[in-house]
Length: 110
Image 1: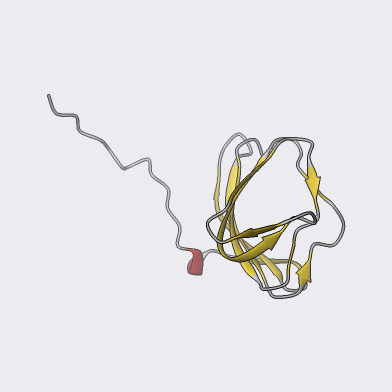
Image 2: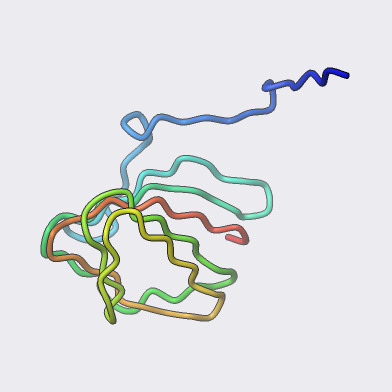
């Protein structure tokens, strides 16, 4: 039995072509996808020696983080490239980096 799959509903984006939005000095977001239910995926680029201004609170839902390159620090510990972090809804942290880093972020509930 063979199954045919359609890719016509796929949505894709190239990071280098995604619009850039500066969130704080040295911290940029590139939106890759937004779903109907508020879900979204983006790449966050953090230059060396940058820190989020204030506390990043995960509401209404969780945040999924994959460290693509560099070393990310959540205010408590370092996460090197290849690390995955699940931050549950209602949790918070202060994103920062001394080396610079690139993160893939997914928000399943917005």
